[in-house]
Image 1: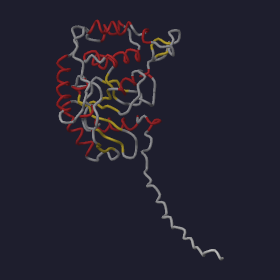
Image 2: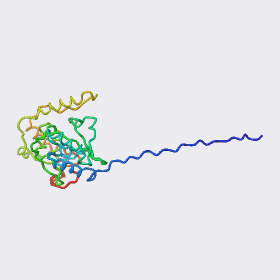
Image 3: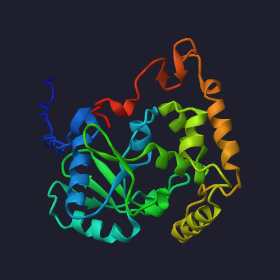
Image 4: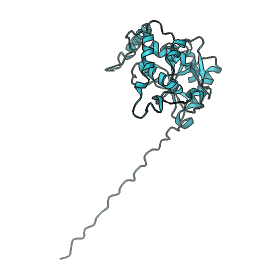
Length: 273
């Protein structure tokens, strides 16, 4: 018997569509730090008569702390925020454009409420921080320029802000990065009285208002514990050695961020700052 004459039809497989290609953001200047980009922004604002200085994590890095930066924080006077936003969003600085603010609040921060900007085609972000929120005295700013020309608050102003806002982590990082002495604080800081509780209460009220209707389960508010500034200063400076770890032995390190005899970081031309 002859076998049946079967015919097999091979199904046609539709061609696989290539996944769309996206151009990832390019790495910003100075190995990804964005130093030249933030310098351009500060010069742009200054050219239009708006004071500014870099605060937050970037300022701590400038003064020697071992922090990791997600975005730059640029401080401007409270009464100049609206003008600065308008200028930066106008397209006059064509490589910068506004983007939505952060969606989730950070601990003890109102960064999710600030105007946020991004470099076009590069992974570079910065936010505008009102001077009040950074606890930086305005009119005029007291600044220290990096060797690249970026304006930062002077070490005295920055250290005082951490003391007044009871930002213990930043205070210790700033002490260990700059390796200042107890006597330095007596000479340059206002150590009388307590921290600024009025500031903390205002910031907490704004944090609560910003959280309304957002569905956030928990928000870390600004500390309202009253502290004695002198006692806090002496305690944190005297405990520098206690913050050393096994990777930073006291035979080699003065602080967890500073090798013995190392120069002050802000006197060096570090392209990351």
